[in-house]
Length: 81
Image (tube, rainbow, N blue to C red; front, side, top):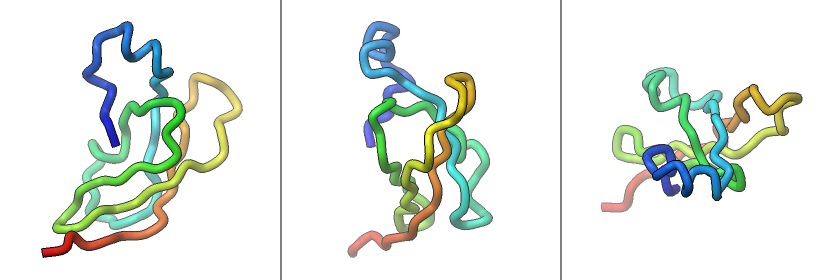
């Protein structure tokens, strides 16, 4: 997943950056990883965590634009060694 949060303002506006909240998954996933800004077209988010990836998929759209989009945990994969 490409993080567009640090992109210049023109790039962020062009891709339609949205606020996202990650729900579920491991209890020890740090809170700062559970809130992020992603491209509006993003359907899946993959987070590196303790030798593997936590996978989250987009839930239903929020009722208002001001609310973040919820991505729910769908599983974990381990990094091949």
